[in-house]
Image: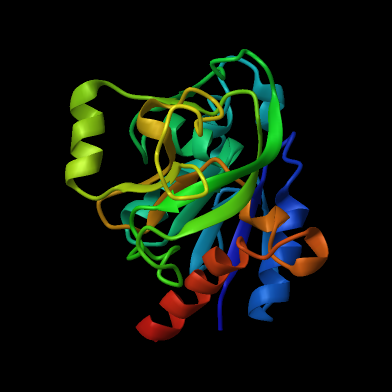
Length: 233
């Protein structure tokens, strides 16, 4: 059984999408949790969905990071509950301090909405164990602030600790400037914490989880969650 909770902020617009995707892939119901609640139910995984939480005022994710529910999300994450933040959810994870760095405006200063190719650098996390290392997958992005930034020491630490989970690449898996859609440092598309149980990911796996949507590469991330829970049972 997989007990998943999706946090709903004012301005979330991918919360229902990830709910449908998770229920389709795992076969288990998903709990929706309102941002004003004080506690997240006992969960095997917590999802911070994409969207424009609190209208993206101040910085993207900055207000959501201080919402009542995030106090419990942070506490549960530090206690070991897996958390995935997708797009805006990645921004919230950075703003809440669960992940380092920040997501800035795209280098083009334009909103980007298209499929991208990703190289899986770490296939051993809670969310990627159904992948192979260096596997190339395709997922959609839809963001104006996906340009990952951190200081050089932090970037080096992320690489040294194998915490860069996915990077933008070309069809052959080459991590190049031309394959980088938003100017993200070192082509970073997703990073995790030291445990591999907190993941921030800019592309949207829920938008490409079945062939009816044009592809199913996002399904492996959702299947990885279920497999990780079953292995731990």
